[in-house]
Image 1 (cartoon, one colour):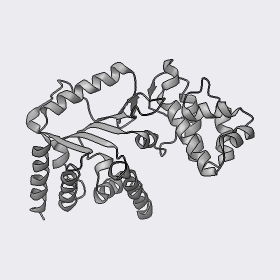
Image 2: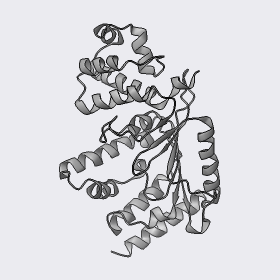
Image 3: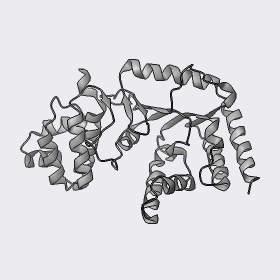
Image 4: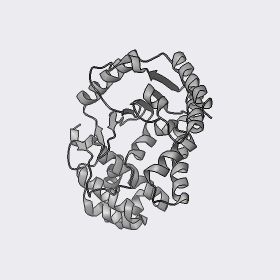
Length: 293
């Protein structure tokens, strides 16, 4: 399969268009007729396997689905971005800042392998930990807007807590994540106990990389998440490395790039405490925060 047919923006565009169509109650045949395209063409577009993506088609689909302005602008941006083979996201004006492209990837993933050096990852955050971050991160928003952000995060966590086929989480947290105070001591104590409890679930593994471990891979990687979409479908998607940063995020899917992050994660994981020792440390630091009240 040519590389251009398996890019992240192409697949993301397809996912969001399918969601919009289903929300509108239309069938593929009905949508295709309205934009004067064949059903098979629209089907390939939704699957992320279209040979050619026409921005005019995406604009028309957004109109007939009643897409809001932000979503429409984002999908048109994805359509334009899908024309390139590699996707380094510093979108500029292509996609609105308040449109979270990563969420589509997250919702489709079957396994998350990640390393975090500053914050608890979103899927493992308590409501109060998220709330403290939101209040500082977007201080100009109203309290109601803050709560919507918190609830959105809580809803996303169903991916790993649902009873049927929960996603697998394998995460290493640097010890600095445990010591960095978000909110206050009470918030941190509850958050760390939450992590310890989550780590007892069969689909969730949490390890701590202590300060004493230094830099196991010999290089500073920053935080990253490797998303695996499983192999139980006829069109299995390649794994993607998501590396967020302050001014723009990277989405990498070339085999060599993913392999390098696999190697870095292996080195980090081998230097980390085992699961039981990590759980004990989480509870120990939680007690320390509780003693500060």
